[in-house]
Amino acid sequence: METLLITGGAGFIGSNFVNYMFQKYPQYHFIVLDALTYAGNPDNFSSLVKNDKRFEFWYGDVKNAEIVNALVERANYVIHFAAETHVARSIFDNKIFYETDVIGTQTICNAILKNYKKIRKFIHISTSEVYGTALQAPMTEQHPLNPCSPYASAKAGADRLVYSYWRTYDIPAIIIRPFNNYGSHQHLEKLIPRFITSAILNAPLTIHGDGQASRDWIYVLDHCRALEAVLQSEKNDLFGQAINIATGIDISVNTIAEKILERLNKPKKLIQHTFNRPGQVERHIGSNQLAQSLLNWQPETAFDTGLEQTINWYVNNQRWWEPLLWMRQIPIKVKEGKIVMH
Ligand SMILES: NC(=O)c1ccc[n+]([C@@H]2O[C@H](COP(=O)([O-])OP(=O)(O)OC[C@H]3O[C@@H](n4cnc5c(N)ncnc54)[C@H](O)[C@@H]3O)[C@@H](O)[C@H]2O)c1
Image (tube, rainbow, N blue to C red; front, side):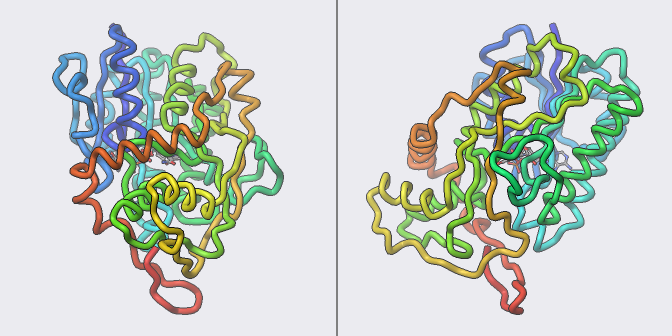
């Protein structure tokens, strides 16, 4: 039996990945390492996963070399999701972003290096945020790295750190740069769950700036399928690559708010505009040509279908998200000196 070590597996994407892979691959043993920060929730694992001996949960920090070494030693594949992930929170208090996202990644890389012969693949989950605003459309992996927020810069540091370990030590690293994910089990601090839950509660949908900012929205299960393709691939030319996971379509924040209100039958007057967030990225639209050619992967879920499934999940799982309501927004000082909730 082969063993996957998944860091940050109790968060949004990590838990979707574990739940998806677990039922599809009975030959894999799953180890999750997660510090259960405000963003992690062990209830995110399906009961099928939680009640099976093929699944092990380890509570611990990715910066703790001792626990990381002990778990990496047992793994054949490492998928590294663990990170602080909220852009607005990184503007509010950024130290922990550099600690977890950069030093945590270095700790993982050192453990991979120690266990070089045993690890087949190390998949590092980076982000499209490393690029900053699109200078050309769509953005390829060659787009300059112009991170616009402390979160993005910490992730850019981690992304290039992994690359440097591949160049220097030849660790079997593959860097994945997903664009904006959405789907079930996403924290309410993120845009789509915040809008959906606000609409359900008849509360305002607050849009920062004019709402023209756009993102490339990828359904979380399409992202999981891309990671599955990386794991299954026998190609050696994946190592050292940075690969976008994108749809090639961008959709504005205004459009998303309108679609959610329409689907939930709520009035447009719930939309409210406020100060733009500092470090805002204006446009993200990714090229998935490299993922298509290297992984034979492309997204399968149209945005309206994925959004419908996501809305249904939040409508049916109020008990999951109600305790998170108070964390939907965070105070940030904008240039004008005002404190604004973001
Ligand atoms: N959500 C997106 O749209 C998106 C897009 C691109 C890339 N990413 C990247 O994907 C990864 C997962 O994102 P997500 O949205 O699932 O994040 P999330 O915030 O939902 O989950 C992060 C998980 O990491 C855990 N964690 C945090 N600090 C840790 C530490 N020191 N040690 C161990 N575990 C720790 C948390 O407890 C949580 O379970 C991150 O690396 C993120 O940068 C996310």
